[in-house]
Image (cartoon, rainbow, N blue to C red; front, side):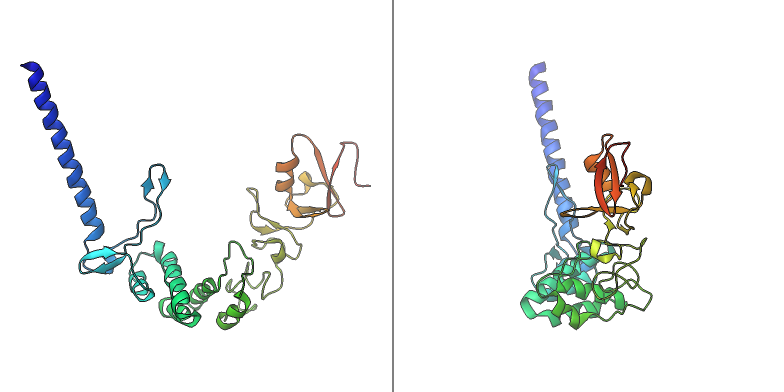
Amino acid sequence: MKKKWYWVVGIVIVLILISIFYKTQNFKAAQILSCESHSDCSPELFTDCGGELCAPEWNIFCDNGQCRTPTNYTEWEIACKETDNFSKSQCFEIATSIAKDKAGIEVAFNICNRNYELTDEAESCRLKVCGFNAAYPEIQPGEEACVKKTISSTCNDNRKNGRESDIDCGQFECEACENGKHCRSNMACKSGICNLNGIYYRDTCVPVCTDGSIKDNTPCGCGVQGYENKTVEDWETQYGNGKTLFCCNGVVKQLLPDQNCI
């Protein structure tokens, strides 16, 4: 009899757990799908899919009380206006990308202009439509012609805007930046060296090392024949383990402790 009771209790517990599971899932679904306005809907950007992040779900458009993904750039613009600030920029990137593909650059530009009150933010939005990525500032096909239509900033307005790396300097419209200024490529620096690695002076223009041990002259950078200029941190990572690295006339050399550049 006891064994039968154990079985009965076990089955009841399993049924209760299953019931709780389905109620939880239904509650979550109701939370995600039910809405009265677009602001009730939110994107799922960081959902765990078994140890990996799932593809983002943009169920941000409220349609007859249900959240769903927008189907055209007009719906995207409407929904993006009411999304949270964390997701707003990414949301409008999708909206303008769809608008550019379906209706042309000018329509995408107008979405930027309507939804960003600050001039610099609207310009940044338009530059993204042109294909400009500040993190990887390489010129994309057709970008220059597009930029001429959208850019409004200048190199003497005391603001970091447009395609500038730092305030009124960079590798595109303005002159290259002085040492100590922010950068994302060697071309953005007058010295020709942008420190893209390391803990200190990261993404900063640094001078060419003076002749001598490069470890003793940080922050600075040094070149090597056939390669781009690199910073001290680059060379120490690649050639560490007690080897002595010197910068001689702007070129890296491996020298013995009793040697020098002469």
